[in-house]
Image (cartoon, rainbow, N blue to C red; front, side, top):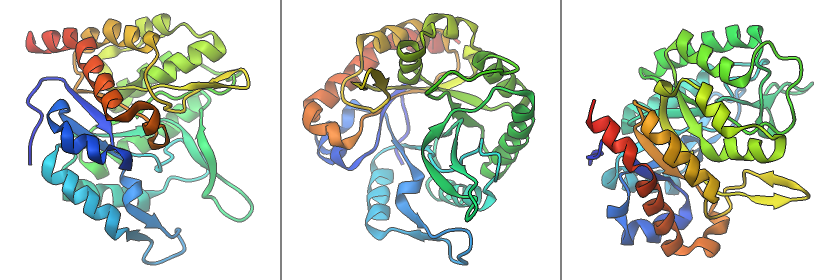
Length: 300
């Protein structure tokens, strides 16, 4: 399997619209980020043979693995759901990690499953932000340590979009992230577009957030675009990155001493807006924006 040659690589989050781009511009990227949950069907915890591989999707994954280094970006573990911690889902992720040797694994620091009268696995339809409380910290520390033990590797947890202010918390989001990484040894996936969304909607200072964050914990950075809807700015992965996201990347990447990759995300429905040339332009901009990070890593 090919490996990342550069100290800090540039990748894309895979979707089906990228196939032509990857055929024409394979040398433009260093790795592919894949969502493991898109390669199987989860029939639910009451079914004995719960996880059913999707043949066409698995063939796609096999082809990607033969051509590129892979990293995993999970969307279904829901590690912050108070009602449940799905160990079977975690075991499934570990099985696929053993099969494909992901360079690293990331997940959202959020809850997507909520408890209802009929099921503990009702999907909320979006990643819900968590309260930054002491009791949530205790719950998460136990789960993160379990997850790293089962996967046999450090996990990176992604800062999320805060849809509304989180009231009456015991600490700030930055304090929470710093404490979680210190107590568990996990790393961070720093999503700069999520941070930009919060700065637009909630008037959160992105620069102040980054100044207080333990940047040594950052192993990967995500960049993406969004759009406005009914007065709010959305993390819709809608095409090119805003200029402010590139500014944040240029500023913060050289300060992340353990950064391994910068990943561009876009939703496949926006590929007609971008086209392959647009994807290439964003990837090349990401590479230019984090040249300083390469120099820092090379001097270690």
